[in-house]
Length: 92
Image (cartoon, rainbow, N blue to C red; front, side, top):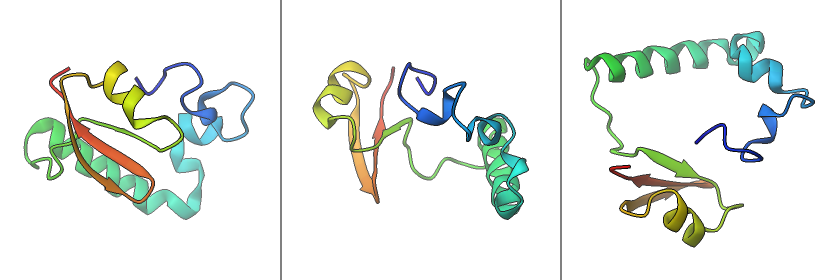
């Protein structure tokens, strides 16, 4: 769902941040954080690191929580809000 139309402005072809979406290591100030994120994601995918959040989905408050639950995670469970993000678990 990350590529859902108009969900993230940075995915638009005319957005100046698209280059960082397609190659996040271009931003040298974030390089170490991205490398650590990739390592953690790879560990979760290969099973050597357990996902501590249980979350399978998230969204920010610009989309209503009610429509997100209805459209994206209808059989899911709201887990928690961290900053501006809402996290959910869903079997979908």
